[in-house]
Image (spheres, rainbow, N blue to C red):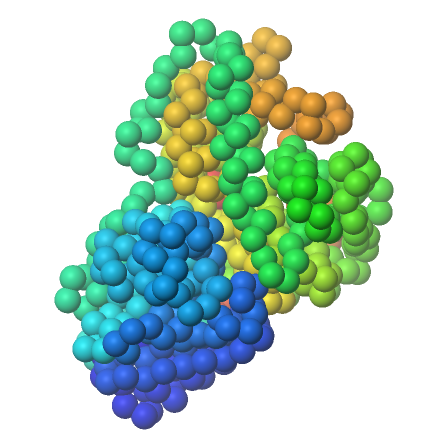
Length: 500
């Protein structure tokens, strides 16, 4: 939470109220500082340096920083800048000193997921969000003050019509305005290289994919308070779990895995196969119809979204996060793999049977993740003060995956969806998991069937100005969303899947 502008005592009080509305994101501590025209506030979820990493974090010459997220390369930044500058073991301190030393150019040093605000003694101010938008950030621009927060619910009702999503990969300062410092997908990858022969690849490509993903997962294992894996039983989360399990074994640490589904659901059965194979500390949550119905309005409110595809998966996600948060402070998930390796069915239909069209659609969907799957992923976990980490959306993984000729990602004779990714991890998982077909989380967990009951019982909802409701299901979810976030403009804050 941050503000810059005319901040008198009344505005500072409103800032505190905004911060209190998102206390669930950081239940371990609260901190704030007000210097002239800048106010910074922070709700802390203690993961790195539990004792010494309180925020706002101060540096030399009255510099301060608040940050939401993780800087995975903080140790390398310490080595580059000099360990003598650092006073804590917090990864956020790496961002503080990078900005002190390099100014806004210091953002290029940061590898991770973050939304941050930085101020200096002369009230210079900077806000930035990571290139993919893994961590959320919204803002309101008024003539007298500019406000920033991590969730829509933080903003006062009077400010809601002005709330906009802060664009990923951008930074903003009062003097410099909005500046892009990084892209989710590097421009050099548009369009991709072309294949000489579709579906024919060598061990070199498989090794590159495998090693890049392994490194991304291992970098995200950092935690002083334990870490687990959300294991749906699908290919993507199973790969993440396999890498994490190998890392945990080497470092002699436990690895809890968490799965959820309706009684007899395919996700529960597949996740159990993976967990048994890897030897993880596995936890299963059996979701009853009553559980799902009760969680539905909570899920819509938590994810601050009404898109049916998101809500269907958010219901089991929320129940899973509620359970897992009592055991770990952070989890790894498989988000992003489908967008990088063409996992969704529609990628293999017209017009995306053309390689260039497929590549363009993969790039588009990666760029849209921040207000779709990543919003659901962040909100369902942070609703219970737990952090979700997404190794498939590491900058290097994105670059490697979108350098692969799109022909290699297309279905053909003897090639199922994501065959290259499956081949890259041959031997890491049971064959039945490596070759398991794609199921949406809301389908495989059994949530979709259960939620249809709620939709049929829902009242009709008239379309709001500027909101196109595409189905009765979406209208039912929109009614819950509107009641919670009346005044927010969906077109300025949310994305929608192409289909419901």
